[in-house]
Length: 265
Length: 153
Image (cartoon, rainbow over all chains, first blue to last red; front, side, top):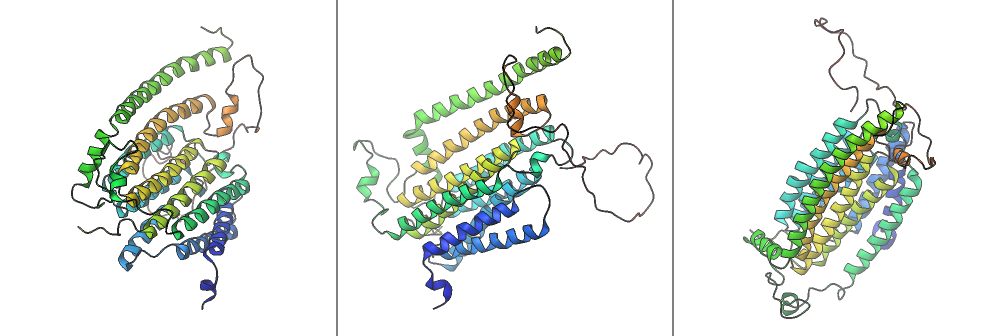
């Protein structure tokens, strides 16, 4: 029996979470550049990832495991790089890679539409908006608020506590065969009130040919009211953004006039 | 097309929930510790990605589309949030010239006293460091004009 196999999964997880927190603390921007701290952080991060991989469940096939491992590693490593990179532009680009990883995870999980929508909406629209703002608002040079982060040790500890609790709960959840069993078909088809029929058959094959069509049916059937509310929300956000810009210009002029000694309009 | 992983298996649920939890914790650390407003919003989006992975994992586990529909609404709300938040970030930048979250301590009515949480330095950008390259070729005409490229990204 190898030494690793003799450890309980909980101990491995605790070690991995601790290593992840120490790695984040070493890698987060804290002012002076320290090459040794960076390498130590990278090594500790790799150890944490190895711990998480060891405690992961086997998926039943080498191909499936390889695909899931690659996309989830891309997502997690790019996510970590997003928050430790000093330059916000690089941070946004790492976030785009993290989005690609998350889209891969969603595709593995059988959510084809969401995988593509993540790429199109997030990486194509939201992230480009972030990059536009960065190009408009980035002062030249690396500012102090990019070089020094706010209480990196306490935040890393907070993240470690959250991740430890979550991962231990998840491990206990999936080790218990009774907790999250798939309900019988009749239970899943009828909703809480018993009479409303879901458009989705229970335990639907996630990669069926008409999966996206059934998702659309669910969206515009059961959740039609929510779709309307979301449309109103988009409209309000659009109008609100324009209104803030228009009022902000006038307020800025007021500020300049006040600073120059003039009277408020 | 066969499913890549069998539906309803606890293994894929466990692994996907773990990935979602890690992404959420990374986003939490980022939003707690980074001071650049743009990076803070990127961290918030990272947390939303973790939530999306968890929701889709449960949706997959139960063979129900409710989780996926919720992720579509997460996308919608994220787009709205990014639009409105970036407007505020741009306004704050136009007023203070910095993307520092601490610059928002200047946000007050003109009659109220100033609250100083972190003292903001007047100018805090470090000049970029470029690699030293050996001189090669000829100097193009007009090379002494101001450079067109950005100093630092």
